[in-house]
Image 1: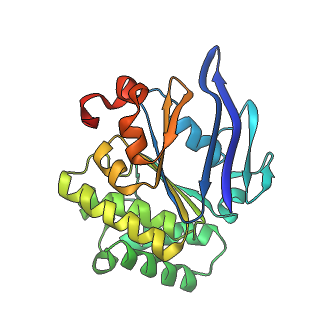
Image 2 (image 1 turned 180 degrees about the vertical axis):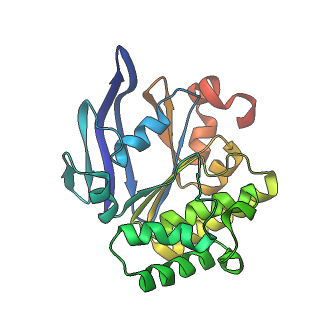
Length: 239
């Protein structure tokens, strides 16, 4: 089962943000999406999650082509994303921040609370479920953002810069958490991330974008060895 963007292009005015990109994410794999700032990475995630309609090309979920489906419809099919900015409801508890999304899917309040507690345990925040969201550390805020996505029971989980702002120890903890989630949920996970070390250690495959185009695809070892990728993005970090 795959989430596929097939020859997708997106333009804003005269600027091609994404130019004829084909990307595949299979259930059970972790795919890294990397590239310089402005490469089109977030635009691709917006297309895959229904926040941006492609101008050419198509998206399909498990072989079914996405036409003008709402974002909510895609969530119900299991396509769930996080955002760079978590934006918690600061005056609500940690658990209530997660419950809100469950209620939007039609769960009862009791079921939403049960689901929230379950996913908070998965991300290591069970002990902080009743804490006010505005009392959390930045690292824990990002875990709540991940918990909100997990509560929607994804088949395909799209993470937009999950390690942004984390220190080295927090990023390493996140890497182990994402790897564990792949096992427990059997979902496909796409990771946009500028932390090259995290991507290289975490991902099965890596897709590199540059100036809106696909530059390279392959295993972490293949991407490290790719001369074009080194020149365009990795530089000395690939050494």
